[in-house]
Amino acid sequence: MSPNDNAVEARGLVKRYGETAALAGIDLEVPTGTVTAVLGPNGAGKTTAVRILTTLTEPDEGHATVAGYDVRTRGHEVRRRIGLAAQDATVDPLLTGRENLVMLGELHQYRRAQATARAEELLTAFSLDEAADRRAGGYSGGMRRRLDLAATLVGRPEVLFLDEPTTGLDPRGRSELWTVIDSLVGTGTTVVLTTQYLEEAERLADDIIVIDHGRIIARGDARKLKREVGGDQVQVVVVEPGHVPEAARIIEAVTGVKPQVDAGARSVTAPTSLGVETLVLVAKEFTDAQIAVDDMSLRQPTLDEVFLTLTGSPADDAEEDA
Amino acid sequence: MTAVTLPEEIVAHDGPEPSRGMIHDTWVIARRGLVHMKRQPEALSDATIQPIMFVLLFAYVFGGAIAVPGEGNYREFLMGGIFAQTIVFSAFGVAMALANDRKNQAVDRFRALPIARGAVLGGHAIANLFKALLPIVIMSLCGLAIGWRIHDGLVNAALGYLLLIGFAFAMVWVGVLLGSVVATPEGVQGIAFAALFPVTFMASTFVPTESMPQFVQNVAEWNPVTTLSNSIRELFGNPTTAATPNDPWSISHPVAYTVIWIVGIIAVCAPLAVRAYQRSVAK
Image 1 (cartoon, chains in turn brown, yellow):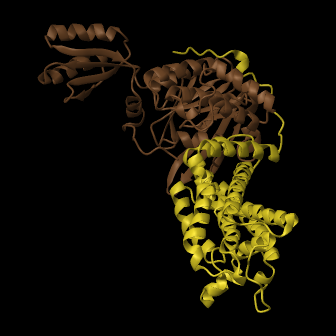
Image 2 (cartoon, chains in turn red, green; image 1 turned 120 degrees about the horizontal axis):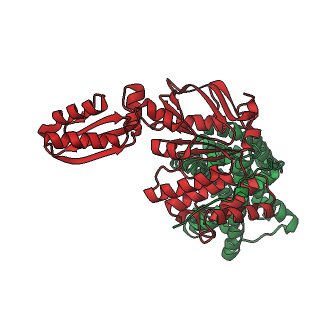
């Protein structure tokens, strides 16, 4: 594949902070026009990877190109072609929404009139017209995120980096932002986003890269990853604590997998590849065995379960990488 | 509430814009700094209320007890010192502004933009140079109100103001260096006060140096705050200590000595600040 087909290419990225390696050798290929999600818990190295690719920090080893330019030696050329939404919305709270966008436009080397027109265009696209002349410090979390995204787009980036774009948003704000990112993706921009949520990665990305402790532990599209972790999870919560062992036996018989048992929550969980049929089978078995059930559900694996399957250990909730 | 659908042309790329240069980028960031000042009047107190307070305190509380060389008016003597002191404190505001940028991550956003190297620091420096003009005007008016006058003609007065502005620009770079090395607003506050207060007091700012013990007097005579204060007094035609043949060069040539400091401070602090800043933010 020629370099031009990949908007982002990284080989063997290593970044150490003192003794700890935030990145321990990461390879990355993001084909132009696609969306890649970097999925991992706090401290996995997601932010460090984004900081290297956006020229904010230099790797200790390895090299990377973004939009065809080396991040280390041609940083300025990279910066002309990227947009970055950092983890905490970094819009200027003392400036109005419009002033924020005009300033960034000018820093993207637009002439003043051009920057003003661009700001106007983005304010409209992100439904911020009404709030345009209020200080960004007074915006709601969702509005600030939208302004932050708009700010990221001011320079018409070829590659967009979104570092945990929905962290800190309520469910409504999150789904609102997903719609925005969806429509961005439809416009052919290459997007690299980091997230802690499998659901988010699946919703938005073509490719998912799972990282933990600075290493890639799995990659592929959502379907492939789910196949690796066994797809859906069936979960049954019984009424009587005494019925838990029997419930576990039934689930194992149906799914063929030894289930996870949480005795305190009277819950039994196992991966299944049978889809909704699992519920039908399990329901029948429980009825026959006359076990009262509080809750029975089929759901996608959580990130924790993905990690458990991929690494054999639960996701650490270490401190977020700098 | 809002359904957002982006039209395709909103991100259509037609290649990046050509660079518009360091001065352009610096000015855009300087304008942001000025808007910040306007919208946080409380953060301007070091340039507005504080100098007035010092003028009034020294003129009306300590003034009567301080002997002025040549039996001049203490209020006229005082103004050169207060001008100098306030200008030295210009370092503080810019250091705070930089530390605050760091704290709320504005730094990263700027660093991911295609802007000229040094434009962020330069922008802060320019904005704070404008900020330094504010107390110069306020204090001139305040001084006029309590009986201070310019006696030595417009040309010398203009030179006096120019010297103040020059020194302010040098102090702004001290502040940029401070703000680059010390990353938190609290740290900046602590260090600025611990360092700047002794520097402004061990000088002829408020009292003539003759009254000081020999060691302190030696320090004061080579302290650029002394020579800045004396230069201003001289250029405005206010009472100042007449130089004697025994005085060190700094006292007999206060303007030249002060200019050397201005050039020296900028030549040392600006490159150091840019280096310290690059290193401290590139983590």
